[in-house]
Amino acid sequence: MIDVGINGYGTIGKRVADAVTAQPDMQVVGVAKTSPNHEAKAAVKREYPLFVSSDDRVEAFDAAGIPTAGIVDELIDTSDVIVDATPSGIGAKYAEDYLEAGTPAIFQGGEAADVAEVSFTACANYDDAQGRASARVVSCNTTGLVRLIEQLDEPFGVDRVRATLVRRGGDPSQTGRGPINDILPNPVSLPSHHGPDVKTILPDLDIVTVGLKVPATLMHVHALSIDLNSEATPAEIRDRLDASDRLFLVSDEMGIDGAGKLKDFALDAGRPRGDLWENCIWAESIAVEDGELYLFQAIHQESDVVPENIDAIRALVGEVDAETSQAMTNEALGLGL
Image (spheres, rainbow, N blue to C red):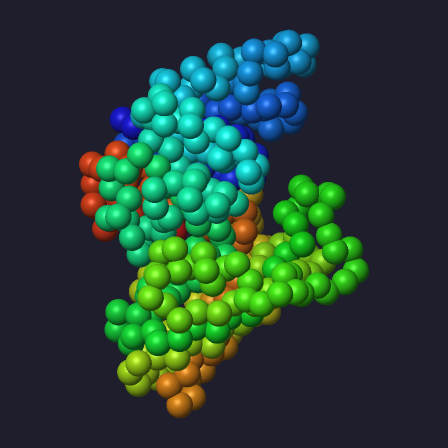
């Protein structure tokens, strides 16, 4: 069994912890929190050993009646792999601690690319991460873009990508995020950071991305234009995308016309927290004209990187290949709507 420690038990950390628990070859040996909030109590209720960020925080947890198992340094020492799910910018501060302890570490997309030896998406560069000391699972949007591009590139060849990203203002729990009633170019300078982030994995790809931020918390939506190197019909594109468990084709018959109904669908399907680990691609939007493919896809920002974190754990340990790991992850979590 791979002993996995998770530093940070928020939006991503709690989902990764549950995903690790579902795997047949790994287990959670502890999660770390800074504050004795409701998430810390939830971790204890799920019987995850709870570690605190430092000795001076123990008293606050004791006062809240939340039992702790030690401090984060001890969690790092006892883990085979650490998944850093701390807020953006904090992971980089822990990087030296992971390195000194000799514990392979997985960072999230909110960190700069140079925090780790390799940026990671399982479908594109699993082999590059095998046996490494660190990997950075790229952001939710970058993960969604790379997954789609990789599925299209092998059979059709992808020559150029232009993407407009309509981004949620914040996660449901981020009450301080906005805009409240506005539509913001984000960033107003072009291109957005997502294209360069994709190129940390697919360096030769011609890709330009632009972003807008809107007053929503549900999901991101991408409008894509992709130049293909070979002829393809919409039916052929749909068949190719439908073959991947990490892509979900939303058929017209489902009556799902937006992100709200996608989330409702996920809840009705029994998904934990209403999570959608897959790219959600509207089948009816797929069109091809003069070798240019157009489509819309939605990305659930809270969960699509979770399976990638699980695959990154196996990659760093280096015991199974990419195909085996992805199949194990998909089966254990139930990917493939």
